[in-house]
Length: 125
Image (cartoon, rainbow, N blue to C red; front, side):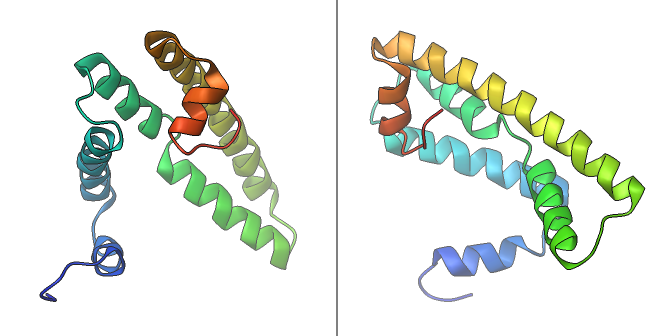
């Protein structure tokens, strides 16, 4: 272990974690990030930020990305094509839920949805 922890070192170490361990560490990092991003967050805001960060399943995003890379190399099998469609639907639904959460946070803060997205460093919702 290096004397100074870096993001690259942590990311490399995370590659050796099981999916449940990775999910657990992501949840902890999301909480840390939420508390640092906006100082002294109210618990409601902290909870919303945590849910916003976790709204889109990381495993689904990664699998869809892998299938997209496969698709660039060759035609997907019918099973892969079906899986790609299902993952796309799942991610789109999760994104819609994420926008609902962002709207809730915007209302809580008394600002617009685009403004809360800008504050959080997100693209246009």
